[in-house]
Amino acid sequence: MIHHIIFDLGGVIITLTPDVARERFRRMGIRDAFELMGTYGHRDIFLQCENGTLSASEFCKRLSERVGREVSFEEAQYGWMGYAKEVPMHRLHFLDRLRAEGYSVMLLSNTNPFLMKWARSNAFCDEGRPITDFFDRLYCSYELKLYKPDPAFFRYALNDAGIKAEETLFIDDSQTNLDSASSVGIHTMLARTDVDWTQEMAEMLKI
Image 1: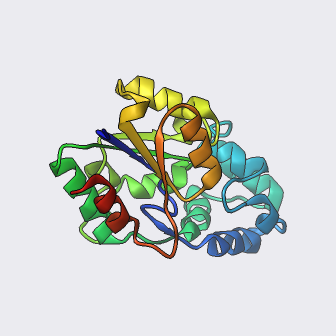
Image 2: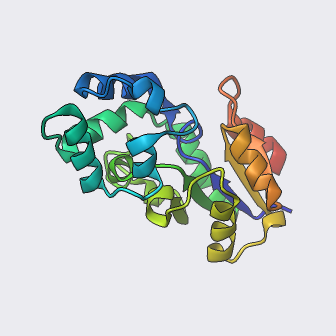
Image 3: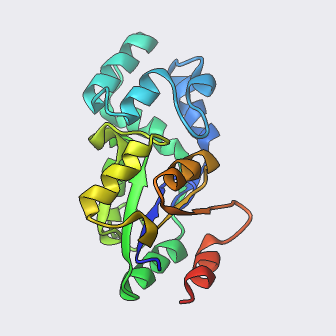
């Protein structure tokens, strides 16, 4: 029986516009932004920002070196925020519903300090609530220096939360990440763009 649910952020909680982010960084001067910023994973300094190899300030420094001028935290954040199209409130309300039903709800995401500064602020959603209002625990790649699809990321979350894999469901929009979660015994669910995953999950859990 499922008692714990782990969510990805982009493509599950937040709807994405990756081409907007890539174009913003391209306009900053990163000519190969479209090659470096993949749909399900990044390369070079963008990967290093999300896997914790580079801090926010170090990322800005490296970005500045690439474009030949100083890039501020705010400008870099503007680039990363191109990913976030919208945060549908019905998805967040579903998280509230899950917690009211007794499920523990966690986030496990490949993300970065720029997006998470916004997510942890009251600007995150239309109701003025930060992301921490909706989750019991947050597992962010840049903070833990773990990066999906590494199975160690999932093992860390299970051990830290003190939960069993067989009682846990993970939802992500990447089959590769789901396969990794499955490899450690976690149940999985694919978030498809053409299906409302909240209804699908409600039917699965019978709530």
